[in-house]
Amino acid sequence: MGGNKIWKIAMVGLGGIAEDTYMAQMPRNTGVEVVAFCDIKPERTAHFSQKYGIDRIYSNVDDLLANEDFDILMDTASIQAHYEINMKALKAGKHLYSQKPIGLTVAEATDMIEAAKANNVKFAASPIHMLRPDIIEARRLIKNGILGKITLVRAMSAHGGPEYFQYRANDPSWFFEPGAGALYDMGVHALHTVTGVMGPAKAVSCMAAISQPSRTVRSGSFDGKPIDSNKLYDNYMIHLDFGGGAIGDIVTGFCVKASTAPSLEIYGEYGAINFVQGGMKVYLDDHARKIRGWIDQQPQERPAPSFYQCSCIMDLIAAIEEDRQPAITAEHARHVIEIMCQVEECAADGTVRKLSTTF
Image (cartoon, rainbow, N blue to C red; front, side, top):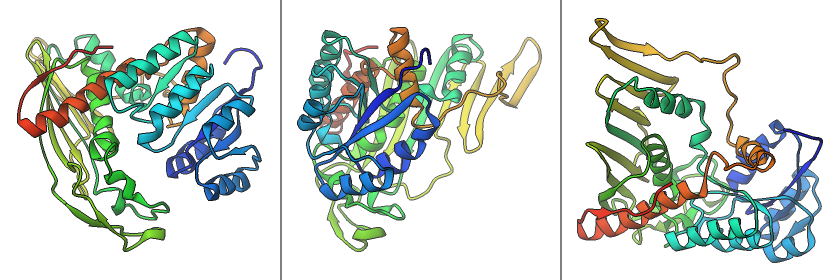
C-alpha cells in the first residue's frame, strides 16, 4: 500500500468468524490496526478486549460511530443486522466491509450502494471468492476462450447445518429464523462464485424443501439443545439461465453431512474446469492438435498470489488509495440477493422468474 498511513478498523459483531477468521488473520495485513470492538453482548466485547488488548469497546454501533476515530468498519454481525449497521456506517462516512449477505432485499442493497456513492466511501461486500487466485485464473481461461463457449456450470455449497459443527461456542438457533437460513448462509457462496465466473444470470428456478424440521446441537456450550428448524427451507436445488445457451445448477443447504463432489465445475465446447480438494484441474479437448485430457494447472506467477479471508481488507484499502471499485462489489452482492429473493418465490410456486439486476 502507498504511503505510511495506518488504516484504523472497527469491528462490529464478535461471533466465531470475527474471532477465528478475521482477527486470527488480521496480523497478515500490513498498515492496519483494529482500534475498537462493538457487540450487543457484553461478554463478547469483554472477551475480545481481554484477548486482543483493545479497551475501546461499545455495546451499539451508534455509540461507536459517535465516539471512535476510525477509517473502516467491518460488519461481521448476524445476517439480519447487516442492513441497519451498514447504512449507519456509510452515512457516517466510513469505508465498509460487510459480511454476507449485505442485506435481505434488492431495495436494501440499492440503498447501501447509493449511500456509499453519496458519502464518497468504498464498499466491499462478502463473499470474497472473486479474490481467490483459482477463480481469477478460471475467469482468465474463460475470457481467453480456452474452453470455447461455456455451456454448463455446476456448484455445491452445503454442509450438515450450523448445529452440526464441532466446537460450536455460540447458540446456532438464529440460523433457522426468518432473515437467516441455509440460502443466505451457504447458497450465497455458490451463487457469488457461479455469477462471478459466468456473469449476471437472466432467470432462475428452484426446488426446495424443509428436509430436517428438527435438529439438535452437536457440540460446544449448547451441546444437546433442540432446535425447531421448520420455518425455512434447508435443502435447495437452484437452476440459473445465463442466456446464450448457458445454464447453471447449484446445490446448497444444511443437509450435506459430507461430500467429495467438486465445489465448482465449468463445462465448455473445448474442455472443462473442475475445482476439487487440492486444486483446480483443467480438461482440454484440442481437436486440431489431437490433444485430449486432464492437466494440472500450474501457478503462472512466482510466488503464487497470496489469498486468505482477511485479504479482503487489503483489497478494500487498495481500492480506497487507487480510487477504484473493490474486487468484491456491492453491485455483485445485489445481483445475488435478487437471485436469493426470487429463489424463495420460485420454490413456493414452481415458476421460472426473470432477473433484472446486473453488475
